[in-house]
Length: 262
Ligand SMILES: O=C[C@H](O)[C@H](O)[C@H](O)COP(=O)(O)O
Image 1 (spheres, helix red, strand yellow):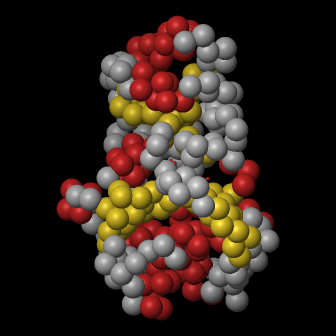
Image 2: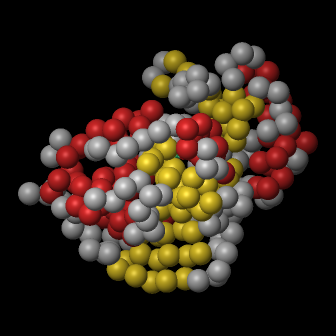
């Protein structure tokens, strides 16, 4: 018997399930990271099992690779795949132009490379992540460990020069030690509260020595699918301007919980 999902998990599940409708036979797919993307991986595995869907996935983190492998999704590296048809991923915040903050799960670097190598990016999310202005969620910046304090100081100087009022920056920790990303780097979180010009900030942050990438995704996302706890999903396409209001059955099949030990 499938476990009862919380309203937030129902919202994530229905968004993920609707996104997987966009997947077609033979596609090369970017597989995002995080709790919402994990639902997408489970829904994709279900279509592979039940319909014999043929796809190849490129995971955006070691966690997603492990999950995909455990559910029998064929995966490969981006270097093998080279170019992808579609990436489906979660986000921490999205604005009306579908600019995003990502990296709450420290996977922003691979996620940005994979999404940029895709013809289309679909973001799956719940409504709580919709904002008029990005920045309430701390902006993750991936820095190399060598001289990270200098890189952090340069980020702080940059924020002063841009007249950013809230500019508290903190090294992301994992217990007592710095969190290490899949690429062996650190994350500095920028607590900005509001980001006036995300496009400019995304560009200038990456000019700082030691900064590898930042969590602002500008002009990368094409479609956002917003799930709600009652099964409603809103699909918004930034390129066509189309908005569809849809419903998805939010009762997952029993074996979708296979990887969760339920
Ligand atoms: O690094 C992690 C990713 O950018 C995630 O996609 C993002 O943090 C959203 O994760 P979740 O779906 O768990 O809220």
